Image (cartoon, rainbow, N blue to C red; front, side, top):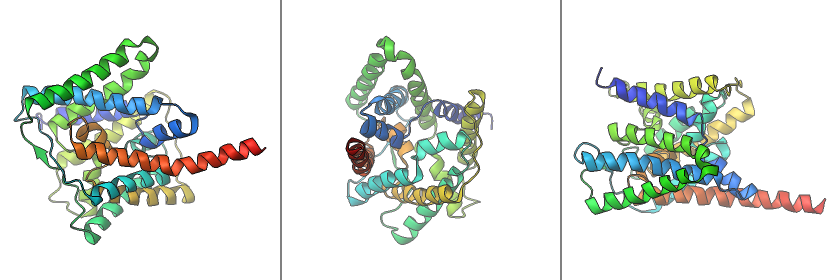
Amino acid sequence: MAERAPFLVLTFLLGAALARVSLCALAATQQLVERRQWAGLHKLLLAAAGAGCVLLVLHLWEPSQVLLPGAMRIDRALILGGVLLGAGALINGGCYLGSVLYLGSGNLNFLFTLCGIGIGLRTAQLAWPAWASMAVLSRGVMAQWQAWTGLLICALLVLLALTRRDARRAALWPLLAGGLAGLVYAHHPGWSYGRVIDGLAHGAWRRMDWLAGLSALCLFAGAIISSWLSGRWKMQRPNPLRGARCLGGGVLLGLGAAFVPGGNDSLLLWSIPGLALYGVLAYGTMLLTLTALLTPATLWRQLRSVAR
């Protein structure tokens, strides 16, 4: 237990950091489409860069101990998964990371999101067993030139953010969240709270990894306590309509995570920092889907405002 306690502390701290910075893909895309602001996407990039710095340094230090995401087949299931993650985030009102932020802030409607994710994962693996899996492969030693190249790019992004005085303070939280995520994934490759929900959805109580289950609880506990300490906690009781949206959005998020595999949390904070091409394509597909879905409504509102 003493050896595994640091991992639980790390996931608690990660949840606390996620409650202080929005790494929600939906919120970032809304900022870009509706207000032409890049701040949200910039935070996502910094979080991935922070995770990459930590993860790649540790991999270069102990390549046989710190595993990186393995190569996944690029096919229609991957693209479909990205589309479903985008559509699910829009309906739900938040992606995987956004759900941690909002639930940690007291919005109990997002408990239905967790239920929906479980339903989506279970449905995908029953209906499309050849496509659906939450198992993310890890690989051993990466070519050193690849790891050093990725580390150099991540380090440059971090340095550029920290040298800009006007944006330095805003960069600290996403970098901290990314760095903590890098430590989490270095300790437990492919970890996510979605994998814990997947185990619960299958009723695999005896075969579940108790460490992963406790770490998921620590993640949400960290988010709740951080929100409370920062004065952001505000209890919102479930609303039937909002709860139904969260449930439906969660189902799509679960389906998308099964097809990729992995939710957009592990894509942003492990697959992309670990230099996995499938992570870039799946996450990019999700962002493009959100952009395509948000743009028509935004244009319609702008036309109506001009007409008035």
